[in-house]
Image 1 (cartoon, chains in turn yellow, orange):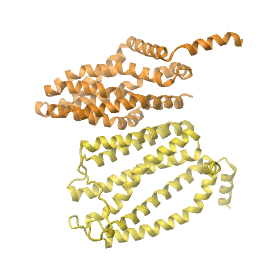
Image 2 (cartoon, one colour):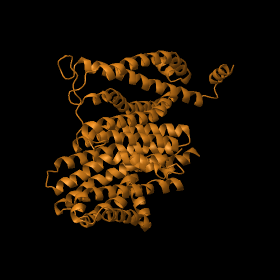
Image 3 (cartoon, rainbow over the protein chains, first blue to last red):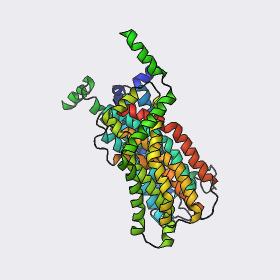
Image 4 (cartoon, helix red, strand yellow):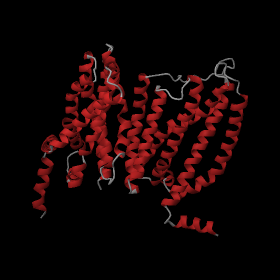
Length: 248
Length: 238
């Protein structure tokens, strides 16, 4: 168990393993994304109130659900950095922050595009939108702190601490904003019943899209982590070997 | 040699945590009282920011009444942000922060003492001045006490959260705005609850829940935030 754990911390091991995974992940993403998008955009029955505008739901919900997972991910990686000083955890945390900013930004943007025809406005100071916006600010704070500290080691630990503090704060922000103002619809329970308003023909494509977008997130995280590994380990023998092999 | 250094070590260990806490608090308060300008600047800033709103929005009493609670709270938040830099900066520059980190006393209590003195110097005056500004903003009379009490519960939280940000950035050459970018999102729950409580008070609504939430946030940040600041100081000061 511990052997496995220390192996996981080795950037070289991760680089090799993720290199093997990548083609499979990309293939899986292309298949699910194609099926999900075609199904969601062409074949899902139109909503009786929202007509075709509800189709953005199939992009908005997966992206938003992943952007909620970024802070916990960064906090866990940060805790590992602080406790075990594992280099790989910090590389993942460093790469996750900007990707998280992007996903949160896209969730806000698709929400605005959906909100315009539905609520008649691009932006409302509603609970979930506001807490999303605040999470966006928190993530930007982490990215800004990372770029402000020059020593990579100090930056790693400082960002780890800020991510943990931020992760504790995210639920507080969520609840404080929630009773402050609510317009966003509550999550609707899924139903197996075909007659229900949320039957399988609505949520099966949603699940496929969630899988596809998660896969996309993992791929971007792996790619940028691999980049970071090469950059930080550029003086080690195995990276030089790879570079030499590429040159030939 | 070792015989001579032993008693010194012992006497250092014998200083109780509470005595060290009191000494740190006393030292910080004394330093602050000698620098009058640092005392006045956050207050002046608070006063000026609040008076910008009637100039920028409208001088109509009805309109000002509507935004009074939020304006006073936002200005208090910004004033406490401005004074944060005094918290560890001077100690970092003259090296006494390192001595604090090296001391055998738990860093939690040292940071807590610094936080308390910072609040007494920059937070409490803002709380005391707030009724005057509330009057200038035509806040309904019912809400005065609520404003003072929510600020009393809320401004310590602003100091405690701010200390984390200052501790993380104290070693940076060009910190400037990054402190605000890090700290402001953390303080928003306090702002939301505080401003909402004052607004509710002027409508005559019940307030128990707001006080309970603010008290809970204060209790939690009193117990956890100095730990985070202490860890951050150890990261920033090598």
